Image (cartoon, rainbow, N blue to C red; front, side, top):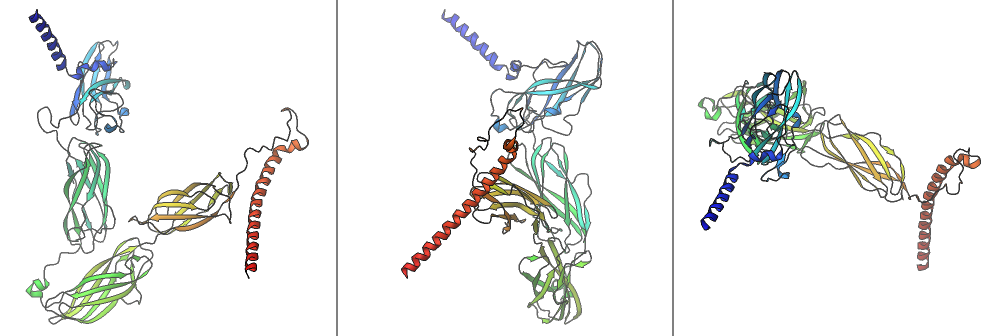
Length: 611
């Protein structure tokens, strides 16, 4: 008997083992594989996050009464859910999700798979392949598939698939891959010539089969003109893409001004690419080199003190410079102080003539001298000696906000080299003063009671040459609630709209002036001093809403024609209310004035008594 019991127990354990060995996806029927019109699967398709999967199906026209021509199937692109967040959908052992499209979006994922003709009573096999998203949770997903036949979308069928989390390797044991980017494929090296602006694009390709999210392309900058040939005029050279699909390419565009001191040649530019391999993944980085070609002046040979043939010639350099004030604004005067040094070890310079030459824009000099003369004479500079040059200059009011060059032409004598000529360059950043004005201020209504609101609208016009960042408007007054209105960024020549509701909190005790404070930020995030404007808004005491003027006015039948005062009742009531409100406000002001006058008289009497 004991042996028989053991055999029964062993049999039950065997059944449990067999059931445990059945994969969960075989239980997909409990979630209802839809009875589709055309498509059918013999086994629930399975896939892993981050890997390719294939959905094999049977196109079944065995019960059809007519032949089907031009049959094709494709994923339904209208079912894409880009807002899915795995963090808000915690992982469980099983899940059925019919609202999330589980595959990565590529340029070809919604291409149709053509089956061709399917005769009545026949079946054909067909399959669709895609890469499973990395950011979805494990569970069942319903994949909508559009079936097209006889030239029209016949129906949308649904196939349930089972998705599990990837362990990081494929079934063959190979690594499932990582995101790789390639720069500059299938394009020539961009080339530019000074002083032209160089406009170019960099081809960026996702060389993997994995979609990259939140992609930032950062250009590597350098203040060294021998390493980076462009002027650094912008504060940010980052280009952003929300997503770059596997195998997808993007064009990264730039517009760069070539440095005047750069030399002809090829320059390697380093790009750092930051990305995520899923919408919630960690930021990863990759670096790549891209070359550009610049045509300017030929590179000087290393002569001078390092060449025996040129040691008799002094070398005059700019040892440093500054401007007073430190920030130069367009249209303002400033002092340019140059520290010129004879960098030679043992060669003196004499009869030195320094001539300053400003960069030109549209044939006009950006910088002009106060005296009209741009030349300065220095008698001599011994080897290693320095001198300071001070020139009063003015920046043109019409120039854009960027850096402009001043070339210092040198002509001098050395003991064995007469009338030597050299030139050096300094760059002066020029700022534009932000300017704005306001349009007509509309106040509706211009008089309110306590607790009521008034709508204030007007335009802020950017009349300067620089972008106004984060424009903010604040309304201040004793009789109204402090109110802030955010306008945003305003481009040069554009306008921003202000639309605010002001609430009355106390009756007006003065002339009803409300201050309007306007502030903005510059490109460095520094907030400007407030620009003050004024408007007038009167606030009166709140009207008693319980008072009903119609209580004593009598009533009359709806079909009767009113006579006498009742005939004009609808005109009289509003007029009476207006008069009462105005009288109340005037009474309050009169009482306050009498109290002030009485207090002043009592104070004078107290002073007389003390005397």
